Length: 259
Ligand SMILES: C[S@@+](CC[C@H](N)C(=O)[O-])C[C@H]1O[C@@H](n2cnc3c(N)ncnc32)[C@H](O)[C@@H]1O
Image 1 (tube, rainbow, N blue to C red):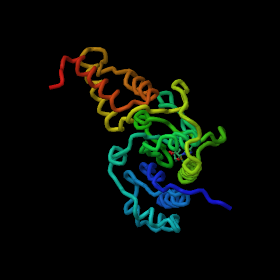
Image 2: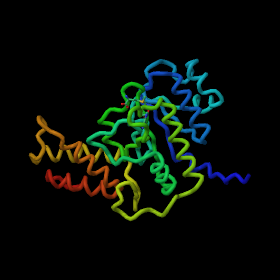
Image 3: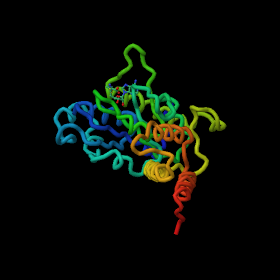
């Protein structure tokens, strides 16, 4: 059997981020899921127990993926975990009213393969609570595994395995098709450099301040204006230059000029 030639650099495009994981075994099992599919960049955001990388249950579940587990980084915030990332994907069993565009794992994997310039992160939630809405609203996309509607919540590491498998298949196959013309809601395409999550977050803060200052947004009663705007901007998949334009508009709204 001819095995496909593997460009291992492509597998560095993707980071797995686990937020506030409660069970050490799940962290080990995610490390194993990643390694079996060729991924290695694992970041843990405030696991809910001490010594996550040395925990005996984590070590046991990692099995032969000890190197991924011991190479993982433990950080104190999602912002730190997203350092260097320009495409953040919230992985969630729950669909929300204020959500970025929803993709299946296969569609997400297709995006990754089609855009080697992306530095993407898959963000997985806590076993009981999943991911908070405020975090999901900041992401470029929400990935939902379209499971049995009557029982759709997978174990954390099994969800990671599904994502890792789909991404591996897409990266091995190469880009599935040329980018779709703009207008297909499920196809995410950048023409220039994708804005980083940090740049987009800075723009939201700037815009929010400007909207308050011009009296459009009532800080005491904001209703759902910012979540709605974030959902709208997430649909647009902002590029760095576009974020700069929006910041320029915010500056002008409050009468500031760039020095
Ligand atoms: C056991 S689930 C958490 C369930 C939690 N009750 C919720 O509402 O999200 C743990 C994590 O696995 C992932 N997950 C489980 N099932 C999923 C699905 N059907 N689609 C996407 N992600 C899923 C998500 O990252 C989720 O945060």
